[in-house]
Amino acid sequence: MKILIPGSFDPPTNGHIDVINRCADIFSDIVVGVVVNPSKDSLFSPEERSSILEEIYENKNNVKVESFEGLLVDFATSQSVDAIVKGLRAMTDFDYEFQMAQANSTLKGFETIFIPSSPEYGYLSSSMVKEIHSYGGDISSLVPKNVLEKMKNV
Ligand code: PNS
Image (cartoon, rainbow, N blue to C red):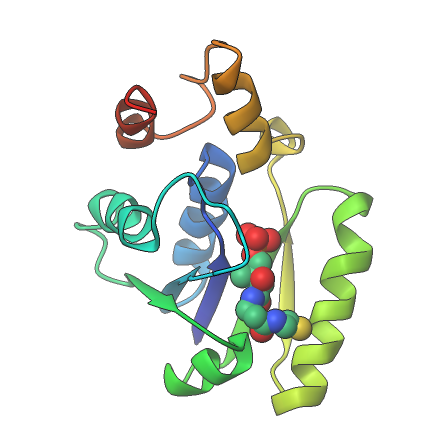
């Protein structure tokens, strides 16, 4: 089964990597979709976010990284995926994700499969990483090594 894991990944966190890795153990093919979102003030460009993820998954044959613009369902169609997978951290994620899942189902019939975050990453988000980093806090246990290196320069 081929699935799409979409997100902003600005930056990718250990929580994202945990979800992608666990999915790669379950599903045969994974497309990680990095959204190009013009309305969002992002820390890293879509190219940088994609290349961070490509570096992490360069030796994992069933994970490929692509960026996309526009509707998720159009990208999902172009990639011929069977379903969309989203990580859920807490009930606070649920309302929004549930609405998106229903919209994506209504628009083009895509099913969304939710996977719970591992307990140790239940609180973790890209925004939290950026905030901790902006105040000089230690993010070394929260992000992959290549993100840590890149964050040293911002
Ligand atoms: O990591 P994020 O920011 O929670 O990811 C959000 C993402 C990329 C999944 C969402 O913004 C998205 O699907 N964007 C594409 C535009 C779209 O299809 N919007 C309507 C969804 S119902």
